[in-house]
Length: 277
Image 1 (cartoon, rainbow, N blue to C red):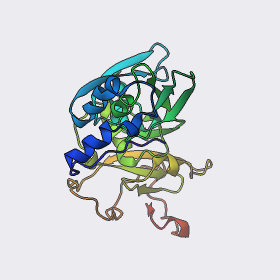
Image 2 (cartoon, rainbow, N blue to C red; image 1 turned 180 degrees about the vertical axis):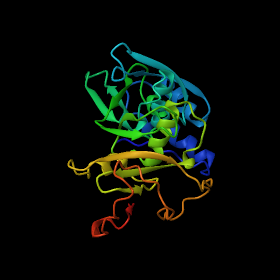
Image 3 (tube, helix red, strand yellow; image 1 turned 45 degrees about the vertical axis):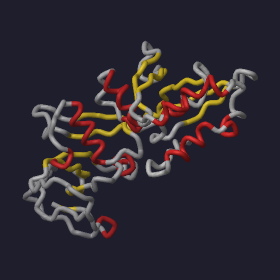
């Protein structure tokens, strides 16, 4: 993965200018004279200056060839992905499923190289390092997995919503996608995601940084598991990340089994974090 390297703003201005104007810095990268490329390098000193990039995005829909975006030299690949999804109103799509690639062509030889970009890379800065037309960006997608979340707390009358998400997508990110689907302005911290097993009558509150797809991959196919989103009764705005502790209050039972049945024996040593009803 190619990451963008940025000089510290506390470095001396003279040192930055010297590194960008030195013939040795990039004379080996392009046969063009210094004067034809000095404008693109000098533009890096103004991080708020805007430029345009063209992103090919057929992976979203076959009818989408490319999208031209105006960005700054500080705009990251992750922000570009978010912008494209918002432009096409794909609020249900997980941004973690997508990434940018940069195709670079060497004019003299015609050799093309495709580079996977890190989510923190700066496309505008990378584009400025090559002559116009010698590079292009494309949106690519990772393989994900389908999760089903019962979300009636967000939309009365809704039973569940199925979403395709990445393995690295966290609980908080999944909740935010659900909120986006319903154009809700509520905060992520107001909700929690639970792993529910009806056959064993328990619920487990997931940590905000857990990966729902990875949790789902551990489920036994012979048991009835699903995800449930619930509102936090003791909601407090998170100011800093603190150590997480499971919710200790009683959790209503959503099982189809009768509550009049005897409580199951707590003989599950591997499920010490689970709540049994």
